[in-house]
Length: 219
Image (cartoon, rainbow, N blue to C red; front, side, top):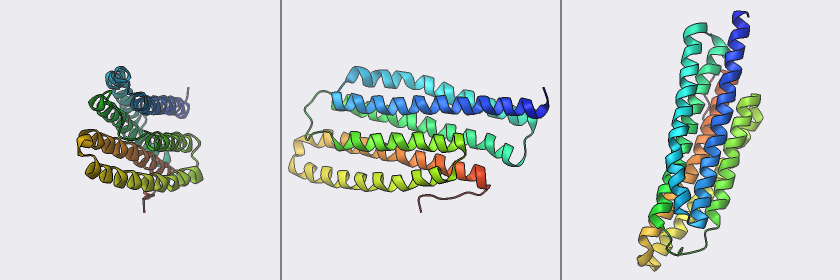
């Protein structure tokens, strides 16, 4: 096998690891929101326990990337492909951490009745998780237009987050007995909003990969 063919094989493996990691991170977020809706403390605990697996996936990606740099000394776009894999794995690991944070808030809320129906948070979480999926598709396909589209969707999440926080602040003054729960719900809203931010980061990495320049898609 030629050096180039060997590098391409390693690169394909790296991409596959990123795709698997992305699916696992999205699953963690989806499960965390399911735990919230169902007030399922046992599921929340499983999400926290499973975070070890996500951390190991990040380590495997980083080890593979570092080995490729050491063995092949890639340059130009090949080097960017390896660097971007490391950057994306960091964002995916943080998405996994956000799922854990949501799970911890679910545990703190427990089975006490919700102050209001939990409808908007799951809706936003679905949008955020789709952003992650689309940003990873943009990475896999090296699709600039899809990467840019992900960033536009982030504005929708930011607006919804702002509305929810304002609503929760009003409820906090109206029903002080629910302050603890409202605080946890506010944290969950923030964590979901941050999932969208990390999806945007992945999209920015895609643009860096293809263009060789850094872009701020949150401007």
